[in-house]
Length: 70
Image 1: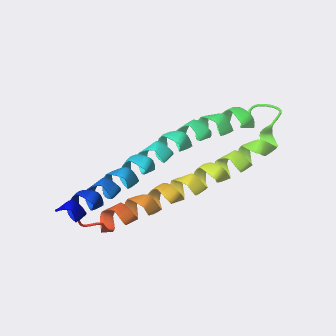
Image 2: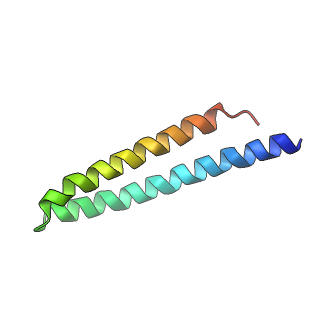
């Protein structure tokens, strides 16, 4: 029983963190869009690449969470 609760907690943490990363990516997308229209256009590509990396990490977290069977 305790094991199942811990696994459920881990699954919940992974999903919550993945959702928080999605929120962060959305904010980074907005910042990258701002940068594309400013004097910092070169930084926009880097910002977008960081956001894509975080999206990939969020997807990995969801896959791990889906594999957990509490």
